[in-house]
Image (tube, rainbow, N blue to C red):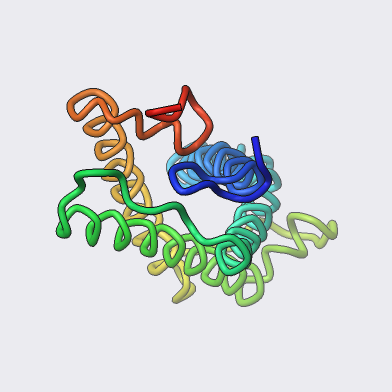
Length: 180
């Protein structure tokens, strides 16, 4: 597999960044929802995982954006309509935006609430009530939006893979590329 893309497949760097990001985003969402809806006593432990995962996901997303300028994406799948291509590009762009907004609002929460000191520097006291800080409303809303975008993305992948049978997953390193 080449480092850079072919006309029908992403390169190995883009593929690695995609799958590492996907796993980290799922873990980040899981820990975020566990912290939001779980037992209060477990929240500090969960956030000590969630916050570094968030930093990792934002870093990977920035790396992915930079890599897209270095190595553009392959062409749209053969036979894809203009509206489907527009929808796919829009969902991908919104996924990037959602992750970056989550990162910014998460940083805002840590700074404004002082929670970083409690979580990572041994500052005394309980965690603050994050709902009292403006970035929390954005963070929570965008987290649910990100889940929705991921479901749309997965639905499109399944549609391509199972209904159109165009082996779309081969673009991301799973299976053989059609015609090769």
